[in-house]
Length: 293
Ligand SMILES: [Zn+2]
Image 1: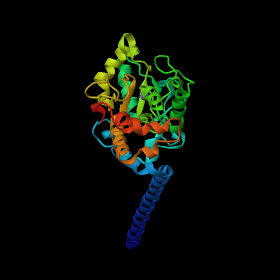
Image 2: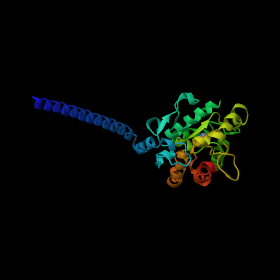
Image 3: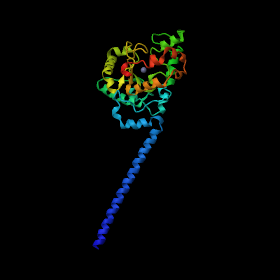
Image 4: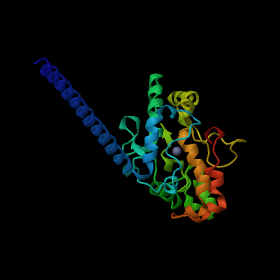
């Protein structure tokens, strides 16, 4: 009897252990399934899945100006803006509370950093509003050709069509607008803030915004690529106090641009033949403020 009771107790113990082991196995299978499903979802985005895995592991490197982005190197289509940001998980939509209009997109890392910067700026009474963000090649082509064909006046009120020489016509448009395939806006790393005129940033509310950015933007990874022209930046675009770039990603894009893109890629829009003579890659794309390189 005693022996039987002991073995009966032993049997109960064994059953309990077996039940626990089964529970553990079920939990392991479930969590593995969850991870696989997550991976599958990321993988559907093709080129970025490896980057996403790394980003999840290293979110703390986001604001380090010199930390390389995990989404690299970008392929040529990303450098030239031949992507649809609404169908590519490398890009995320900009929340309407941060933007002048709906339907804008940013590179996901740049947007995360922008949100942190926006929060800090708001705390200091500074309102940052995104006026323009990612622009595709097709979008930039519309902007460029509207100017090239005289549908839109240039800065200073002149029509590009009044300039007969195509190289001179391109140069005049290039004071403030990039040729399709050469815009930093293709990358989703660059944004225009608050207003598209320097004068806004020189007094009142705009001056407060610009001074805050000069002091704090670098702490969130942002730099101003088009500073005043001078010895540091002798040619290229004129000063743009509204244009800010998320350097941890954009500096890598610039490096890739230098090695991957040639004048053969800058084509498919009115006036493209002038790109080589002007030296658009050297004098405009690569010619940015030292702080942004
Ligand atoms: Zn811009």
